Length: 199
Ligand code: BTN
Image (tube, helix red, strand yellow):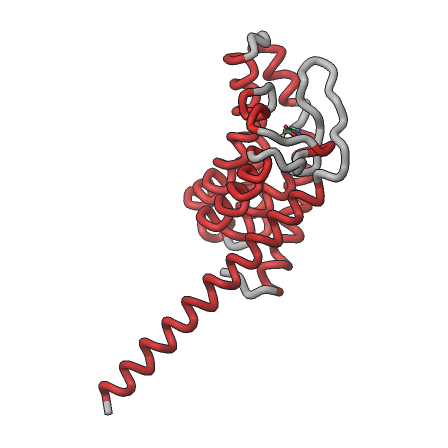
C-alpha cells in the first residue's frame, strides 16, 4: 500500500515537472516571437555611434524577468541563432553572422548574458524587496539596461576604436529610454507571471 502511494506521488511529481517544462518552453517561444515582432519597428539612429535606439531589448528584459536565467537565456539564444543564420529578425529587418562582429555586436552578446545578470542581481537583493515590483524593476534595470549599455560601450571602444568617453556618453544616452522599457517590463511581467502561473 505504501509502495503504491509512493509510486503515485513520484508519478505526480514527474507530471508536474513535465508540465512546468512545457509551460516554460512555450512562454520562451512566445517571448522569442515578441522580440522578433518588436524588430518590425525600425531603429532610430544615434548621433555619435552607429548603434540605433530600438525596442527589441524589451524582449530580452522580459526573457530574463519572466523566464529566469535558464529559459530566458534559451529564448534569447534562439533569437540570436535565427539572426546569425541570416533571418531578418533584427530591427529594420537585418540579420546575418556579420552583425556579431559589427558595432552592435557587444550589445548582442550582452543580450545573451542579460537574463543571467538580471537573475544574479535578484540573488543579492533583500528578499523583502525581491518579492515586489521594485525588486523586478531594480534587477531588470541593472541587468537589462545598465549592464547591457556599458558592455556595448566597452565593445565599441575596444573593437571599433571609438574613444572610450564618446562610447560611454553615447551609450548612457540609451539609459532614459531603457529605463522606461525596464519599468514597462517589470509592470507587465508581474501580471504575466500570475496569468501563466510561472514561479
Ligand atoms: C542590432 O540591431 O544590431 C542591435 C541593436 C542594439 C541596440 C542597443 S540595445 C541596448 C541599447 N538600447 C537601445 O535602444 N539601443 C541599444
